[in-house]
Length: 99
Image 1 (cartoon, rainbow, N blue to C red):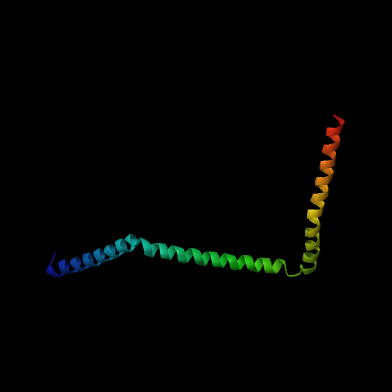
Image 2 (image 1 turned 60 degrees about the vertical axis):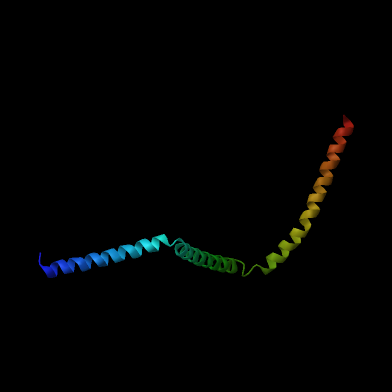
């Protein structure tokens, strides 16, 4: 090998070593890696939330009348449960009196 060849080999080795050191330093910087992962997760979550929001908006666009009827049904639900409990309680009381 000639002197210029050796000099080129030294330069290539230095560049390779510098790249390796930079890569190792990046791997060792746990806080920076955590920040990058957190930013990626946040972006994914925001994208998903936007998709779900759009889907919900699309599916509920024409439901205003149905929602009103559903609210009436929701108000009647506790009354139905109370009536069921009264009937069940009466049945239990009747059985106890028979024995």
